[in-house]
Image (tube, rainbow, N blue to C red; front, top):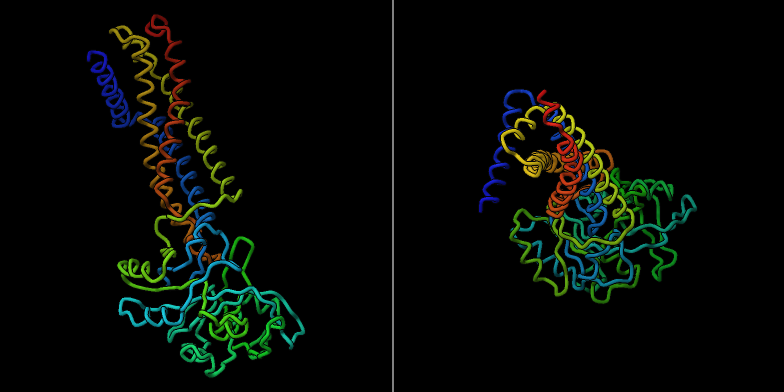
Length: 410
């Protein structure tokens, strides 16, 4: 009990010493220590958020989409387009049901195919991402491409008979138009598909869906027409369903639509399974090591200078009965307190850094949620702070043991 009270008293003394220095305006070195830790933790949290963003589930983004319904086996995927994997069925009926829900602003299936597209006008042929959607009355962006030029609804579906009017409309992204040298009104065909129908470009969209490799070449068209062109009308399949809503309570309803599916929220705290891609892991490890090295050097150096400037106070503590172990504990306690303050500031700055990174990425790259905040980042910050405090305490403790009381007081 006596030992515990002694250490509690030393801890109180550490807080009083630090607070007194800061209050008297004599704590510049202490503030530099806090700033050093804060910068290190901020970098780690921000870069860690980017790493989580790179490894999180990638779903096809729509401008006002709040949720994506995807098959369960895709939650660990880190690519935007999946081929020959599980799909959702009966998607026209499900999207119609969702659009009748007053809490849902818009819902559409998204059928994804990587197809060879031929442009007879320019005599070019390239493989593009072709997305089949059901356009709404309002302009929406899917894969960065506007749906406004497409006829609202899906006329060719005709309640599942697939004999309704054929629109032949497609909208090309800027990247797709550049590859095929497309202009508004040009014809396009899918030469490798059974159907030899010709489609025409309604518009070249100014937007684009950008990844780390650059903008993706995308073509949007009506879902039933893409199903017909690719001979995939059986079961009315789609890869995802995009849902825009104004109420979070809709999520539970979406989870009941299909068995073995996952409902992914746009933005927010990352909750997706992390992939084993080497790039995000390398980024995270680099951020961790940088935070530990920078934080340790800052704190150890500043605490060493602080002790050198206050050797007389430590000598006085020795003369009134503080043993070497107690003085060492005092120094360690002060180091941990400063590191804790810097960690709290660094986490807050890191959250701001994540928001700023997403803002800049959306404004200049057209990418949303490139960095994600996760509570695991707070845990990682706590672990890094502990490593910094322990490592940075070694040098000040060594200086404490080398202090000659008689020499200092003399």
